Every structure is written in C-alpha cells, then in structure tokens.
Image (cartoon, rainbow, N blue to C red):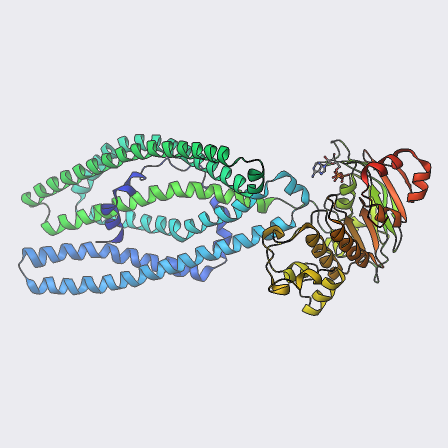
Length: 605
Ligand SMILES: Nc1ncnc2c1ncn2[C@@H]1O[C@H](COP(=O)(O)OP(=O)(O)OP(=O)(O)O)[C@@H](O)[C@H]1O
C-alpha cells in the first residue's frame, strides 16, 4: 500500500480536516517564489524525485492486480513470486525517491526560512526610528520567529504534500478509469453524499477553532506581560490576583477547546461511518461486477487501492489548502515589512565629512513635529552652534524637547523645517553611517546586551582587540568591578544587564563610548540618583570621555552645568535663554528657578 493510502486509512483524525473552506487569499504565497527560485538545482531535483515516487507508487497496485489475477486466481505460484520480486524492486525505487524528495524539499524549506529571516531582520534594522514608534517590538519579533517557522513548515511539508497529492489524484483517477470506468462512475456519483454533510459540519468547526486560537493568544500575551514585569508584580504584591486572572483565562481557553473537541469527535465519527459505509457499498458493487464477469478479482483489488489512494490524497490536499491559507497570512505579514521603504536613507551622492573631524554642530532654525508637519511641533525655530571641543548643556523641564534634539542630530528623525550641520555640512547630505560614526552616544538608561562585559564594550568598535577593550574599561573605571567578577571580562551580564548595578551599567556604557572614540559626544545624564561613591566614579569616567571632545549634554548635574561653555534653556520646544551658569543665575528668571528644582548638587559642590 502507498503512504497516502495508509495515512488515509489509519488516521481518521486527518480526514476531519479534509473539508476546509477553499482558501480565499493564497496569492501572497507568490512572494515566496523568488526565494524558492534562488535554488533551481534543488528544486528540479525535488520535482524529479517527486515524479519518480508518485509514478512508482501508482505502479504497485497494478502489479498487485496482476499478481491476483495471474497468480492467485490462476493458482500459479511462480507468477506470484515474479510479481512479488517486481513489487519489491519498484518499492525500493519508490523508497529511495521518496527519501530523496523529502530531503531536498526540507532543505529548501530551511534555506528559504534562513534567507527570509535574514532579509527581514536586515530590513528592519534599516527602517527609521519612527517605524518602531508605530509598531510593537514584540509583534515584530513574533513575525520574525513564528511566521518564518510556519513558512518553513509549509515549504518543507505542505507544498510537497500538495504537489505529491495532486500528482497522485490525477494518476489514481486515471488508473481507476482505466481499470473500470463503471466503478469510477459509481464513486463519482456517491462522493457528494459523503462530502456535503461533512463539509457543512466542518465549516462550523472552523469558526470554533478560530475562537480557541484567540483565547490562546490572549493567554500567552498575559503570561509574557506578567512574567516580564515580575518585579513590579512582586512589589505590588499582585501574585495572587494575577494568577487568578491567568487561571480564569486559562479555564476559558480550556472550555473553548473542549467544546471544539466535542464537535470534532462528532465529525470524526461521521467521517468514519460514512467512509466505511461507502467502502462497503463499493465492495458490494465491485463484487457484483466480479460475479457478473465484467471485472476480474485482481482489477477490483487494484481499483480499491487506487480509490483509497485518491481519497487519501484528496484529504491531504484539502488539509494543505487550510494550512496554506494561514501561511499566506504569515507571508503577507513578512512581505509587508520587506515592502516598507525606509524613509531616512543615504542621499544619492553623499558628501564626505572632512578628516580630521572639526567636531562642530549647528542647528539652523530647526522645527520638528513627531509624525510629520501637520502635528504639534515639539521643537520650534531652534538655532545654536557648538564649536570644536566645547561643551553645550541642554536644560529644561520634562517634555521641553531635549532628547528630541539629540535624536534629530543623529538623524533618527528628519527635521520638519530648518537644517542641522555637522562639520559645516547639512546632515541630509551625508551618508548615515559617516554621520553616526562621528557621535558617541551615552543614553540615560544605557542598553546592556545579553553577553559578556567585553562584548558589551566592543559594541562601540566591533573587532577591537582585547587590549583596546581593557584600555577603554580602565578609563571608564569598569576595570575596578570587573576585577572582582569570577570570569573577568568574559562574565555574562544577563539580559538588560540585570546582574549590574545602575552605576556599573553607566560606566560600561561610557567605556563603550570611549572605545568608539568619536569626535562628538552626546550625553543624556541619568536623572536617577546614584550613591555618592558611585556618582563620583561615573563623574570621573565621564571626565575621561569628554576630554578633547565636543559635547552636547542633557544635564541634570550641577557639576556638568558649571563646566559647560554654554547652557541652552529649552521650554516648550523653544530656546528661551542661553549663557553660562553664572550669567544665567545672575539674570534670575526661569533658569534660576529650574536650577533650584532640577539639578542634583554633586557632593563636591
Ligand atoms: N517617539 C515620540 N513620538 C511622539 N511624541 C514624542 C516621542 N518622543 C517624545 N515625544 C514628545 O515630544 C515632546 C518632547 O519630548 P523629549 O523627550 O524631547 O523631551 P525631554 O525634554 O527630553 O523630556 P525628559 O526630560 O522628560 O526626557 C514631549 O511632549 C513628548 O511627549
């Protein structure tokens, strides 16, 4: 018996999904074609082995029929032996071809997924910051993981199954007609009697299946959120409340699933009963034909196997159509990402930056609104200039546009009006890479990656030797705490640097910036207070970093403010005042008020 016939006969569960709605939208799958066509040799080998395995599997029942008529019925044991050997020989070819087909199509599936993942990830990294404001990162990573896996399964098994089944259906139907046109007609007439009730019921089941999927998605979203926020949950002693919430949702999902299983059980029973009744009818009708002499016993056996093969293949095709519909959805979600054109890109002919770097920055009447010119501007007509080696501090109340200024300078967003110059050149005329190479950016909440201390520092200059890493670590006073760690620079710091204190994370970020050795430093000082000792260490590390560099700093420390050449006071997206600390204090007014409220006095002052 062939694999399709066996699977159809032994797996009534499979028959259940036989009748799915015809897929309405499988066109997105066309977008996978270029990925498949990248591997023409493997694809041709798959089709070649597919045809061989299908043809050989179709030959076996015909030989079985011959063995019955010419061997059993004619009572000729030699013929039985000869047919037996022939069947074994053909089965061997079928086995090798099926194995080879499975191997090549699975390899193509893996290849396509690896290529897709790579393309989507690389494309995502090219998209501008605004894209990530509009999309949830969790959703994007789920596309990258879940959707690519379902595509791999589709290519590696569903496509191959669909192709194989189509070839089998055409082959088995042809052989059925050739074996006995009358019996074939009987099958074609009886088929709707089974299919129509099953189809009607299966449609109901599909609706239920969608509900259980939704319940499951809710459940996993809730678990992800609560486990990720486990510290907050504990701090607010919400463990019991949240676990009750979770178990209520889990119970709801259980009940939806049980309801669906009940319906599915009815469908399985229905399919088994109707299928068996049809088979008995076919055998009865066939037996009559044998007695009447219109069909031989061998032809009847042969016909029954072909009918089983065809029904098994039909089962597979309808099942695959259902799968392909969901895979089409997955493909669509991924190609949507690939079709999103990055808005912030290199100019057609980038202007080179001067070397050595001048290290100057100028904002010329810059206005900016998130989401485009129609929205409320967060910066209005901002102009200032920073000379080589100078330190300019940005101060102002929360929401006044300080972080936005640093984002615009790095071209995470484009200005809505005005221009920004680095070393005298409009940043829109520079290659993005050249521009961003000129900055060392230390964020307020430094990002620490899961990896070793050395990996985290090396993020500033991939490929830097260990001596350079250690030198940067010394300057940033990272060396002090690394010396106490069991594996030194090879110590893993855990996701988001959970194993480090706030001050240690900041010093690690400073070491990263020192290693990058860029001419312009962008610094977003931490607002959260560190203890005095930690504060002093961070301050010292920062002094090393600022040495000889042009610095733009969002300042929260009085020490930084005092040392700044110029302080820009921002309010509501406008520069309302500028000057040195002493000048501004002497003036009184907004800055003096802010200084009292906002700046943390360092213990040295
Ligand atoms: N990604 C964003 N999308 C839309 N609006 C934003 C975005 N980031 C900031 N804003 C808004 O822009 C304004 C300026 O924000 P910005 O972060 O530049 O202020 P800030 O002075 O750095 O504040 P803070 O000191 O609290 O960090 C705020 O009103 C804020 O709500």
